[in-house]
Length: 123
Image (cartoon, rainbow, N blue to C red):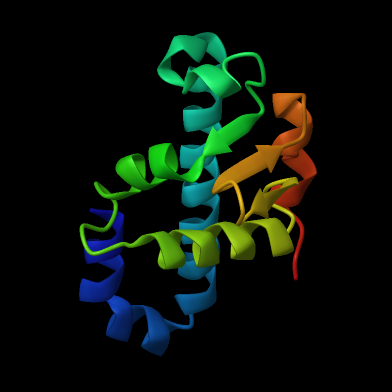
């Protein structure tokens, strides 16, 4: 829904100079979505595959992709990795992507994985 609204009004955002603010809002919304996914999996580790139930700071990309399909029905795994890479690069998520295991490895503490000071950081 956010994506549709942004696309629909992009011309107005560009002409008013608000395009960059809207893009930053998009990144923060994605960060918050991944934080909610991580919190839910931490509270309910049985939702994770058996091998990750003890390591709740590891988010299988397949789980993230299922959640992101509601955001963008055409999203595939490579696009998801690109979105996550951008969030990591911009400091909105602390962690790394393991391509080999197809997981996002977050900092062990959720507060450190999604730092509050990243909201005001500019890159």
